Image (cartoon, rainbow, N blue to C red):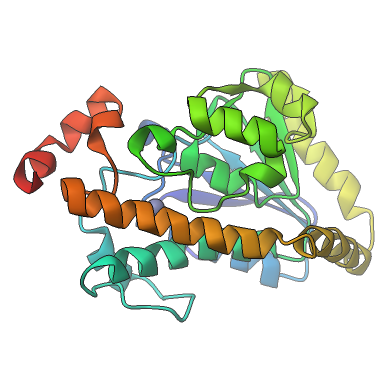
Amino acid sequence: MKEFATILYETPAQHVARIVLNRPETRNSQDTRMLYELNDAFDLAAQDDNVKVIILAANGPHFSSGHDLREQNSYQKMSEFRTVGTWCGFTCAGAEAQMAREKEVYIGFCERWRNIPKPTIAAVQGKVVAGGLMLIWPCDIIIASDDAQFCDPVVSFGIGGVEFFAHPWELGPRKAKELLFTSDWLSAAEAKQIGMVNQIVARDQLQETVLEMAKKITQKSLFALKLTKEAVNVAEDVQGRAQAMQTSFALHQLAHTHWLKVHGMLLDPTGLPPETAKALGARIEKNS
Ligand code: ZN
């Protein structure tokens, strides 16, 4: 079995694989290593014919605080991992490297995970912020604890939403606009009401509930499950989901390039939470 540093790979029941985010000390913020390990783990589960259902869970009080904005030299780190996409150019000048990296590890990985033919279930607790949404939205089913909260605050940092722009599909156009414009939190109850979340359970029942659902699904034919998932996913895609997301991704890149010219950073640091802005302070002073 492959060794992972930032995640766990478990088989809690017959035909069930469970991938667990395991950087609770950083609120499961996603650095480059975690993203590649997640991708490797999804590949492991997808390629194991004995696995029928994949669970994505997280250790700690919060599911994920999003991308690790404090990671240094993220472009150079790309050379440490086996590239999955074919765009490449991670050390190029100007906007090219940033677009290449985000095409690979953000929209590329999310789309790839969304299209894994086997059923996937996200078990979600606590806070899910920005890039955290990009881990749960590609899953087929989302089960949340009653204390779960969801937020994409990146408009506060001058960017029009995270790279995997599923907001209109997950929330509906009006709620998507409200949450993006305000950076407000979406409660588990409201997320269920609008259909983003399948079920809400007490925190101490979360893992058990998800595992029970996974075990129930494993009773079905894997081929039938794959065909069913494909049919639902195609229904979204013929409505233009993937093409709309490519446009959103291009607009996202425009925003990064804009702030790179204005502040020398990929986002507007004046809108960051104080502790993050402080952590990035040297870079802000150096580049302004
Ligand atoms: Zn970005």
